[in-house]
Length: 370
Ligand code: ADP
Ligand code: GN1
Ligand code: MG
Image 1: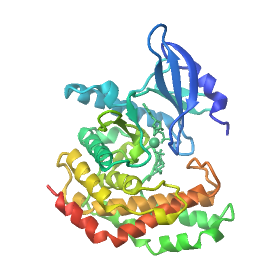
Image 2: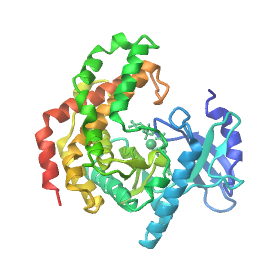
Image 3: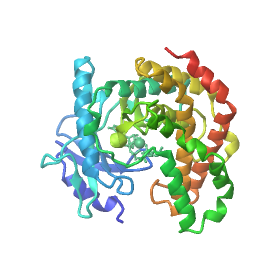
Image 4: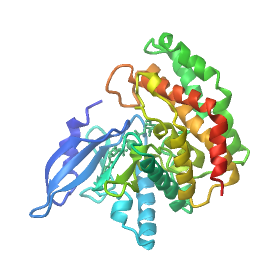
């Protein structure tokens, strides 16, 4: 498969940026898409930036469905934000069409490219630098769920089938172990034992869904801290981005994925596990902010299951990193050998930490019940 750079000029030519393109450079720290920042010079006006992305074909087999979801959701958000007196150009992504009016361009290799205006004056953080910033991200993700509360869920495509189906993630890990295409299974005995000891946990949220205890909502499904843009001046969450996986899901997973990534002080691929520690005070600020952001919409059962959301998203993500490591690192972008295994290990360390603070995690939710 070609490097994105090989098709970059062709993709740039497919969009009318209303100014001369003066450069396009790799941008951001996403694990999935190929992201470029495009600099343009519109005549005498100040230069303007755009985000150009080649959508990952490993993750998304139907980019037209991804884009149909995003056009639907961002148009809906634009209307809601305008009605509430906000600024839709800053508070939601908007799709910048191709020269022939489409939501994406397909290159000579069949790969999909899209453009968003760059949201200026914001930051995408890799770690929660302060509790206030982490709280701001929680309010933004909670608010995002609230704004989409009445969105017609049946119009959304399932862009990655069974995305947070933890039982299926476990089955895919087992299949990778059985196939062992890279001969790496021998290196991961302790990690596989860690998963085996928690097989039953993989059914907890799904079982609650099957029993009707937890409702399906329109959720984001990838609520990493770096998927919300924060205002550089005020530190408030401005815009939730990375909308590829917006689809029906569980609110506890949106909560949980944020905790997985943000309630610690280490990089996701940290090799020194002594530095990887679940931070209960950060969990607390996020819990309060997320519950506030959802505007009291969470049911008592959803509140009960929030700690499970945190633990299961972390366990599931570790399982996914491990599976990709065993399969040869085709899904998550890597910059060095062994990175996906290192990522898996940080996740499992965080799971073990959460287990040792389980009573505290539940007590914190109880403190912020409405
Ligand atoms: P991935 O799915 O690979 O994570 P994202 O859509 O999250 O891709 O984009 C990667 C990064 O690009 C983000 O973390 C953010 O830093 C930046 N980014 C994406 N969209 C915008 C935008 N409209 N304005 C400013 N920065 C953006
Ligand atoms: C990916 O796209 P990005 O980098 O925000 C992944 C998430 C994982 C995360 C782990 C579509 O998120 O599910 O939790 O990496 N996104 C997809 O860092 O698979
Ligand atoms: Mg992202």
